[in-house]
Length: 386
Image (cartoon, rainbow, N blue to C red; front, side, top):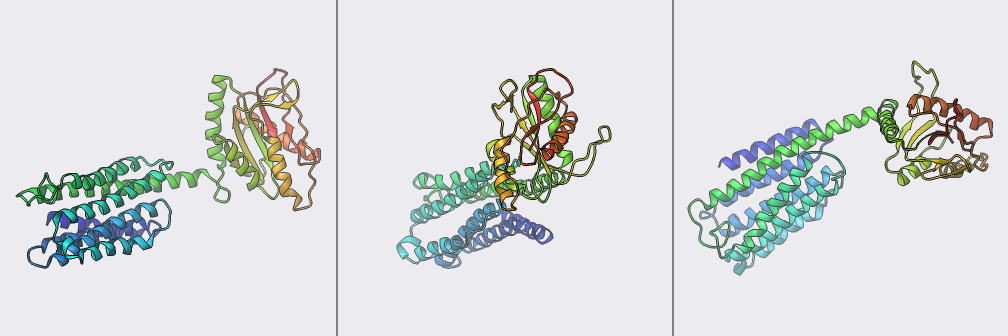
């Protein structure tokens, strides 16, 4: 009765959460899972007073449907569409098998099938959580562990059929066995519920941080995030004396194709969309149409004038040229102007690259220009405009 009360309360809370936050449909799915589990508890309690087909057959229909909803909730949390067919097909399969007298009367048969169904559905829920592990939510990993241990608990009943009393095995029920079984169910249900709420809150906070740091149109970093991450990146490269490039891409119309190309080829790059703000000390304008790309460990051969390891401006220019041809724009050959070090300072890099943008325009656009340096020291660090 205590477990039933807790499941009803938690199901009601999830329903309220979903009502207040319709953008989180997984709350509704987990609410349905808890309500179905509550219905199963009530039906199981009628055993001895009602026919086995009602108490055991329909009771397990509700329990298996709860596991299916739990799996679908994990899918929906990962922004995937739910599978509607298993919601009806899996519980229906159980009920059809229960219509066979030899099955409904045999405890071992019922334990094997119900444990296989329940354990498999819980493992599917854990797998859905695993698929989205790239989304860094701290509560995701404990939930995966709980789903997995819950599944192992159900599947282990198959091996314990002839060893332990019901509901752990198929031996005659003993005093306390049902209570111990329900305590294990209650423990997993409560912990999973708490972690689901925590994980949902973590996602909301992550989304808010992303919205504060990215441009809603392109998904690229905004100025604040670009400057913050860029300065950390330059400090690290400065200490290690590694080469690094800053690209300014002056894209009048089409921007997405070259940016996607860079992201595919260099996962560590920082990409940002330009804004109209100025740094108060340098006072250099940043037009709305450019994109900035930081290329860690990218370098050029300053002696031969050829692009070296990590040099991608020509591929970006070619990709941009393909887009421009649709607008009948000029698609000239890339020209490289190689210069000197501008230092591991992001504002200096941005000022030089901004100057290179206008130099590229004077050379006829659709070309690569390396930024002009004010000193003569050979250097691995370049600012590039495309």
